Length: 275
Image (cartoon, rainbow, N blue to C red; front, side, top):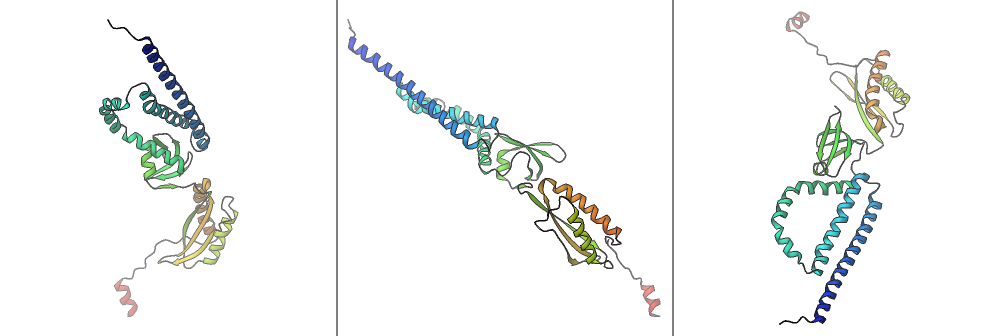
């Protein structure tokens, strides 16, 4: 007949209670540290990322930290070895890992985009040949509305690894015309008219200084280069408007835009002239 030692039972019960209390204390400390991490992340990135997306990222980081503490510290205290769980879940982990590889890559790319900030919502951009306005930057993808008002979804990995042209990153943007006038027209007068039109336009910037000068003498025209700076948000409208105004005003002053011409000489006419 086996007789259980009361002292051993009490000691065993005390050991179990101690392990449970230690596990609870460890979990509480992990939750507290996770909360501190979330507060730090929110303060650091509240101006850099949409609030909805930031909340999701903070929760992922916070819960990942708590799970890490459970696996590494709490389970061993309770006598469960994490290695046994890892072995049993290794096959499922591989399957999930391969399936989520693209998602993880896009998530990491989103974090780098958040840190580097090459684009933001509302910017006019050209990314991998896709031109338009950035409508949304989510955790996995970026939405661009092109100039046909079609919405295009691009994975964040594609956005981050391709060349990005941001047309409104600077407050001012330059555009350029080549205005070809006839050789019989007064180039100095044409340049003066163009400069007056630029000076009068409200969205043509005075600094950087606009330019208008004869660039080369072409086969059919005297080519005048016109370079103008305008606010990035008004760039396209100013470019279209000024080009038409310059053409009309030059013609009103007797200066015509040159077009291609060819003079042809026929052999019989040359013979008659020689006779």
